[in-house]
Length: 381
Image (cartoon, rainbow, N blue to C red; front, side):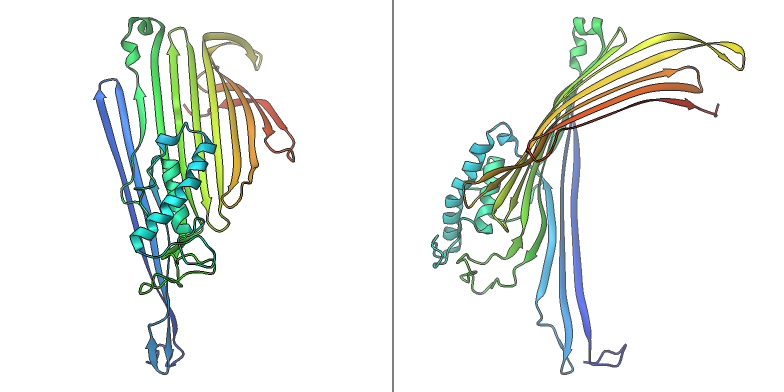
């Protein structure tokens, strides 16, 4: 074959094909008047195929290896393990490996051994680690968890809002609004996968240097993330111009690294408190250009306090060696006061205070404070 564009047999091209599949859904429910529930789910998968095409001896060679790469993400659920001990979950993960190794051997009919010089589904191989990881941290049974990389059905996450307490007379008398909120989000992500060129569809008994059976697809890491945002939130407005907000958030990120058989475990808890008050019709006498003026407006004051504690722990699968690699306790205080002097002029004061104490001794505590005034004049009508 001759390249007609150049008239040369030195033909060198790359064929590529990309598939992108995305699914999003939102379901709004209202079981009764004062309760609103919103369910959301999503799934994204990209799959890229590429092949190098060359001309050899005047003939197009199409027998070159095909490279497959992509990524995958779906909404998930780890709800059943949210309040369980991190150590207990990790121990379950380690115990699941034996069950998954035996399951894979039964499914494939291949001989199974943990000895280095004998073939088998090794406890620290990707084919065993991934389903063992998913089973432990999602609360699934290791005897029935899906053995594959991908998941077909995106599990819904939710946001729930309830304001039915305003039907009670005491709440009516003291509050203008009282809302309770709860939300949960979770995801399962494979940031990058590629086909294993050593995998043989006709002979699945082939192993790598460690005696582990070859996997069809290779991944470097898989992540599970979930967060209550919020676990519970109360947003209140009182009839005496006070407002109050209280919120608790929890989050965790788990990343299984298959290249070095380590699990990165990040957990965080945050408490948020906020209070606001409006002073109505505050009078201020000023002189501008020698002319006495009387200004009247509302002063809105708001203070928010956030206390967050997060910790990063790296766990080794091969040996008992857990290390704290990061984390901090963070205190944040924010105060702001706005005074609208008239339709065009607004002045405000702000104060921000942040204090951090780190979990590792090599990082010193930090503190930052900034405060100031803003004066805003609107030239429009």
